[in-house]
Image (tube, rainbow, N blue to C red; front, side, top):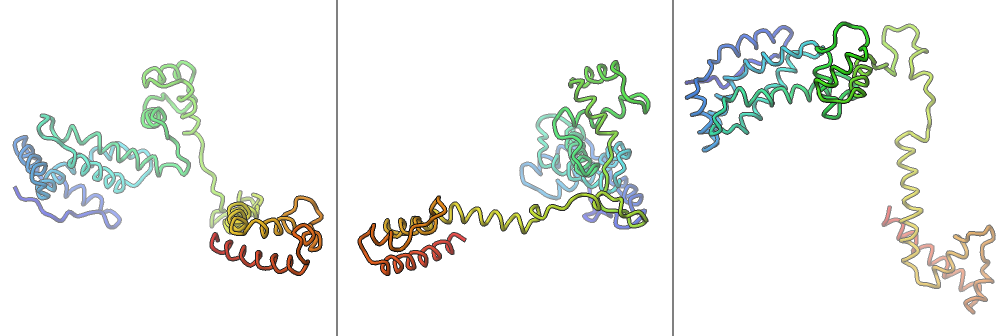
Amino acid sequence: MSYSLTLPMPSAVGSIDSYITSVKHFPVLTPEEELDYATRFRRDNDLDCARALVLSHLRVVVSVARGYAGYGLPQADLIQEGNVGLMKAVKRFDPERGVRLVSFALHWIRAEIHEYILRNWRLVKIATTKAQRKLFFNLRSMKQGLEALRPQEVSRIAKELNVSERDVVEMETRFGNHETSLEPDANDEENNFAPISYLAADSELEPDQMLERLEMEHLESTGLAHALNSLDERSRRIIQARWLHNNESAATLHELAAEFNVSAERIRQIEQKAMSKMYDALAIVR
């Protein structure tokens, strides 16, 4: 059986229809052909066999993707994500288990489409836990009407999906909420009423200010400790007494001169040399 290596993909408006038409021209493999291709791919890593398995199941992806049309996402993108799932399934398929590829691949196709929908359907992630995902893809079909769920309906859905009633109520609330754009619409004449206009700007939260503050905190802690540790005991004592004293009054040169039994000029020289050494140490940390 021969398969074309080039597959027309949607690239312009309306081309999704031609893509769907083209995938229907790839013949469905018989069980014997599928087993042969899958065995050769698994044993010999024959990519032509893998390609044949993928192409013959593209119509399955289209069929699955159509079931998710109600989420308002481009059909071409849903199909593309489903194709990724199909390729993952082919890579992991074990023909010796006696299961047809289509049955095995459905899980991977749906999983990739689900991930895509969850990433793109809402700016704020609407479903993160396993229970929330189950609710996300089942609540719409199980809910009767557009009104809010009654307590009896909440209890029924929670029991059928094996989730808590609290999760059901929370997911219904998430479905009913909508994002509000911070920026005004281009055609909106009342731009001053957009959220971005009345949200107070905090300069301390600007990225450059935050980075500068973090860097200073780093220098004050790790950097300063490293610089002090680079000094000998006498020099460290002089710097701490002169510049890092907890009290408002720092030690004078004469006080330190008396403590170390040297001249005030000598203390000044030691201080100057220690400061220079600390600057070098801080530069390394920075």
